[in-house]
Image 1 (tube, helix red, strand yellow):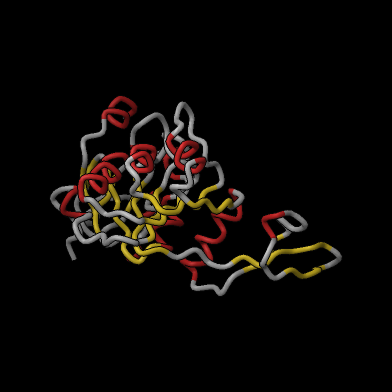
Image 2 (cartoon, one colour):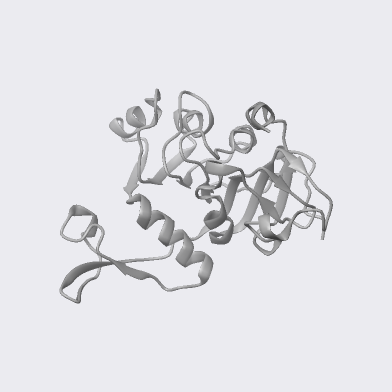
Length: 227
């Protein structure tokens, strides 16, 4: 039952080329930089990455894109602050892009985790985002059918976990993490601190261990300064 893995490299060792990977984060909040860097070093390529944005500066996901490891990006905001990695790759035809509105992105992840077959939403109706998708009028309002967004792996940053994989987040760092843990077949969570089994307050556990397969502790200066 112990889900603690000794290092990010060990946690990501089995990610194959062509995998679909969910990456948590809203800008810098909740971005699992150490896991992303370990995936870069691991060497997997031709990846489909699902994230809210394309990274910041030249670190994390932006670095992965610049190195040509990402074949397709599914995101709501592809242009990261102070980062031209995606913009350059897209302009040169080195990366595909699927635009998904932020709320729709979250709900597609939730649908995957809940085992649903999809859902109808008015978001995107009558726009290019609806091309090729089923549409329907519901109560006089146009809706678009959206499919669940499942993935092979989820890379998530959290604040604390126990050996059973129960996870706590800190403030805005929570964002897409809980949904991605549910939607990924293998959820890998990096945390700042570890607790013993039974030590975490059940009322503060956001992601139960049933949705987490691997936990790795990393040194995080940002969390250290805030805690």
